[in-house]
Image 1 (cartoon, protein in one colour):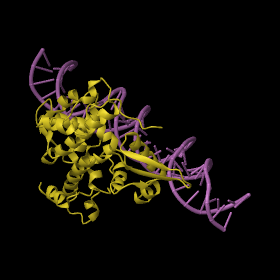
Image 2 (cartoon, helix red, strand yellow):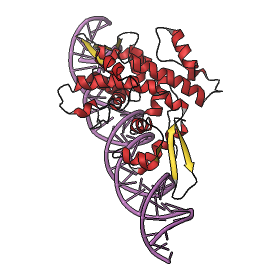
Image 3 (tube, chains in turn orange, purple, brown, yellow):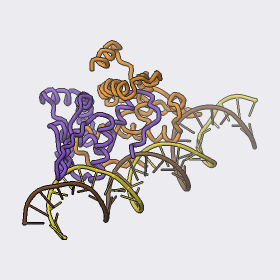
Image 4 (cartoon, protein in one colour):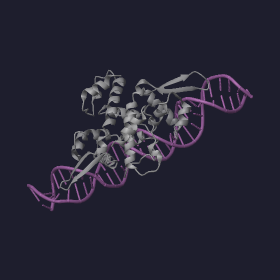
Length: 137
Length: 137
DNA sequence: ACCATTTCGTACTAAAAAGTGCGTACCGAA
DNA sequence: TTCGGTACGCACTTTTTAGTACGAAATGGT
């Protein structure tokens, strides 16, 4: 059963949001940034996700051609997921979200001693760039 | 009744997505890009939205300090909504989403003669920049 | 013959988000 | 005194999304 989609988008932004908008998708995609991953690896590295949700989200990402699914004809099964070219281009979106989101969390919860709020899912090529952009407003 | 939020974000990207992730939020924010708008103006310009949803989404955006609500003490009531400074900084996120989403729609539905798919919700300061970025991959 | 391993499928349930419909306050004008 | 215009609030229903629980295939090793 493929995901229900809005019949109509008033603009491209909405289409993009729909693609990455699932509860687990950003986390899954983040894990794939460091290279292809097997189903089981993903399952272990995305804390709390059930197998059903993992499979479902991966299917949707595959359908949208964000990730590729490579099946090795072995037993027990081996399946690897990785970014497509189109998926790789989401990097700019991730960066923008990470920068704004980081500022947002500092503003909403400035005195939290909880370092969780500073976790960065996206690893910038240039870490200094993030630091700079993050604190200039 | 304020929106239920995830208790925990594994990273800032997720927090950001949560803020702009409502079904109508991108559209509403787009309308505000051209300046402050009254409740009624927004209602008329966002096709299909109900008053309940408009109010609800605006309340959430206000709570997250993305938009400001200015009440004029007149009868009948007059209320104006506009971006906060933090809200204005979402521009980078919008750009990234628009660029990627535009490519995505071309790829998913390339032969659609329907110009709807080309609607841009975000007006770039430099239109050429968009065109350039949109077609280079 | 039986078991372990890996990657799912699927019926069912629960929770969250969105949509419907109707009501309210305010005050000046007719 | 009733009416119009504006910006909502709220109870309820429907739709969508997420979670639970369990089952299945394939095959090499014991």
